[in-house]
Image 1 (cartoon, rainbow over the protein chains, first blue to last red):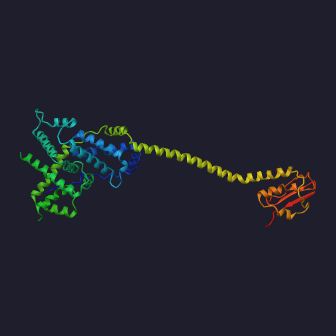
Image 2 (cartoon, rainbow over the protein chains, first blue to last red):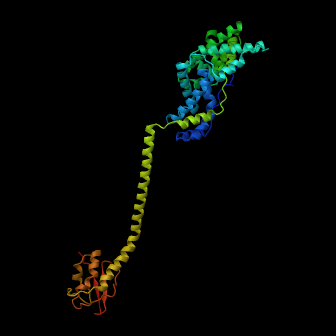
Image 3 (cartoon, each protein chain N blue to C red):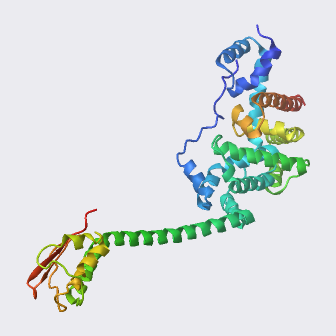
Length: 200
Length: 209
C-alpha cells in the first residue's frame, strides 16, 4: 500500500507583518531593509536558480543578479502576488535565459567540481553502496541535464524546493495544467533512467 | 475499477497532495488493488528523495553583503537623477513659498489686530494736533453757543469729514486766537469742543441726507 501523500515539502506561508514595511522602505532606497529581505529569501532564490541551471556558481551569480534586479524594479512590484513569488519569478526567468544562452554544457566548476570529486570512489575501500550512490547521483544529474530547463525547473521546484503547483505556475508563468504535465513527463523520464540503472 | 493509465496521471499529484478529496479517495482505492501503480508511486517517491540528495544549496555566507555591494555600485539612471533634482527644487521652492506666505499672513494678522489701536491713537493725535494749534483767521461765522445745524450738514460724515470738523474752528471769525482745548465727543461723526476763551462750546453734527 502506498504511503499517504506527504506534506513535508509544503512551503509554509510567511506571514511577517513587517514585510510590507520592509518593501516600502527598500523602495525608498533603504538598503538595510532590502538586506533583511535578501537574507530572508536567499536560500530559496538560489534553489530556484539551481533548479534551472544546475550549477552552484552560476546559481549564486544568478541569485545575486535576481536581487539586484528586484531592488532596481521594486517600484514595479505590485502586491497582487507575494513578494517571494515575484522574486522566484525573476530568478526563474533569469536562469532560463542564462541556460538557453550558455548553460547547454555540463561544466563543473568550483564547489560543484569539488563535490563531484569527493563523490568519486577513492579506490581505498569505498563501499560498493557509496560508489553505487555516486553513480546513481551522476546518472540522475545527467538525466536532469537532458531535460529542458522548463521541465527541470518544474520537477526541482516541486521536489527540492517544495513549491505547490500554483506557486510553480506563478513562478514560471504557465498554467497549472502545464505544470502537471511537465512534472509528469519529467518524473517518468527520470524514472526510466533509474530503472535502467537498477536493472544494470 | 479505474484504468491504470488514467490513475498514473494522478499519481504525481497524489504524491504531492494536490488532488481534490474525491480524487485522492479514488487513487487510494485503486492503489489498494493495483501493484503496478503502487510501484510507480514508490518510484516517484524515490526520485524525489534522490533529487534532494544530489541537489545541495551552496553555503550562503556573505551572500547578502555581496548583493548589497552590487546595489551600492548601481548608477542611478539619468531620468531618475533629473527627477530627483526637480523634486528637490520643488521642495526648496515650496519651502520658500511657505515662508513668504507665513510672513504675509503674520503681517496681515498684525495689521488687523493693531489697526483699531493705531486708528484710535493716530486719529486722536490727528484731531488733537490741528485742533490744539489751529489758528484760523477769517473763518466763516458759526453759531457760537449752540449747534449750527446748517453748517454741520454741509460736511460729510466720514473720517475725513471728522477731521474737517476737527479743524472747523478755522471758521470762527470772532477770534483769530481761538485755541481748542478739548475734544469732548468720542463719536467720530460728531465734533464737540470748547472754546474757553470765548466761553463757548461748539457742537458739529453730520448732515442728514
